[in-house]
Length: 79
Image (cartoon, rainbow, N blue to C red; front, side):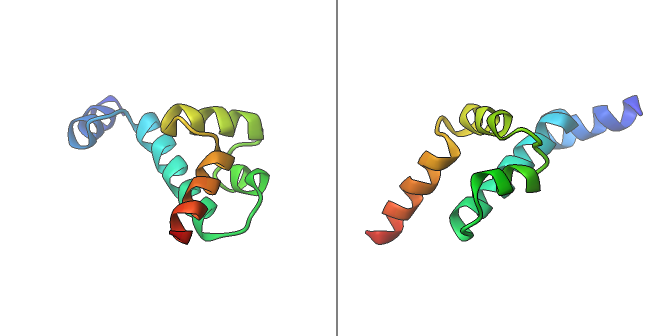
């Protein structure tokens, strides 16, 4: 298993856990901008049982809350 983790990090430049976390957050961004699902629904869909933990991870990744991100994207679409 150690060899796989090492090879993965060499290929992708980050540990598996970090890559997967970022993948889930990127997927959630797509859901935020392309669906009308609630933030709670999106949090659950990408594997967060606690919406506040999802919001904290999202903020750490984007420096915006999911709600701020959605509002900003909607404003940009209207321009």
